[in-house]
Image 1 (cartoon, rainbow, N blue to C red):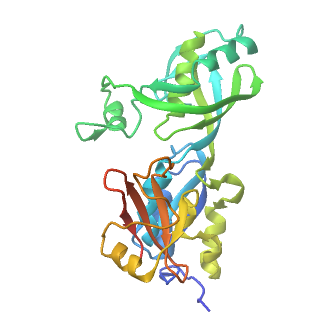
Image 2 (tube, rainbow, N blue to C red):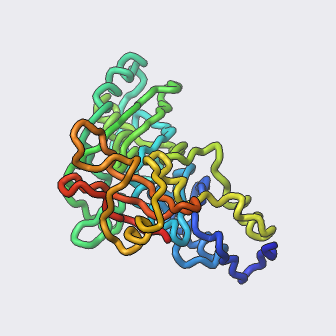
Length: 315
């Protein structure tokens, strides 16, 4: 049995590789949460899968040990947010923490006008990142330049809004549910909505309710996680590494094929389809498991060569 946690102890153990679904509290940066988990766990390899602003709350997947190797797959997944937008005032940060840069009369905005404006943000769109963001300009994060009073012209970036629903309308406050691609700025969405309506707007509150397979209903608070580390039952909250990519097709490989994958050699797989076969829809990635059920690797298809190339080898 694993001993209880005491401050300063390392809880590093054989089951430390995995993913935690954290319910991030307000007022803390994503980096702060990572640092707290690194201290609690004693694991040096810790990283999060998608930054949340300090004021935002909700799902923040944090990967530990070999789990950090699947961060890129979590970053690529669809995210869902509950966003509260305040009409009538724009800010320099595009949220409630910033300085008001403009005001407008939102009293005449009807629900029909609001629904009509939302139509223009569904599907493939272009967004300009806020100055107060982590996007870098010549090696410097934009937010550092913004704090110094420097504004840089930003290039617009593509984003996809898969679903955008008006869930509550209490003028001048609008609550939206947004399902979107990676790289979508909900603050920019709020700001741009205000510009579209002609009254200005900013993001008043934000909760990430889903990141890929991880939902807010199963997320653990930091206080509860700290208690679990003290009590020695933190593993209860640790998801296996392959939980992040369970939507990808899975194959079981022979010992010989597993050995080739460990060497980084491309392989041909039975049961996953092989790139280049006519008439077959081939997935971009698949999960490979050993005969005894251990998660071995993420493989990437290479259509031009008709093989699967090891991308992330776990064993």
